[in-house]
Image (tube, rainbow, N blue to C red):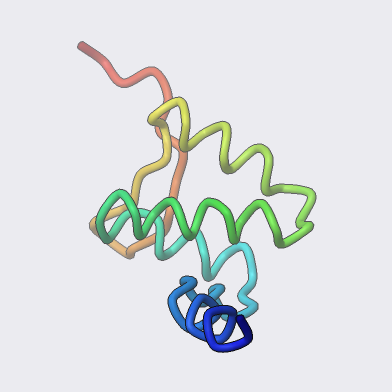
Amino acid sequence: MRALALVLVFLLPLPLAAQTLEELMQRLPEGSYSDRSEVVVAIGATGDTRAAAVLETLGEGELHQSKADGAVVRVIGRGA
């Protein structure tokens, strides 16, 4: 039984290293959906008071990365 528990521990995904909200936001625009879901969980776990607003903005599809400088920005009211 201990061997099974040990195997399961190694099969579980490793948590993201402790990072700031800003560092995690930089990781959002890239990677697969599963990669981003790990970052979303990590953002929620930061305890940063701004995390909820960032996740809401992401959910609304308004979080984008600037091509000019790589900054993560909220884009609202894009013209049709």
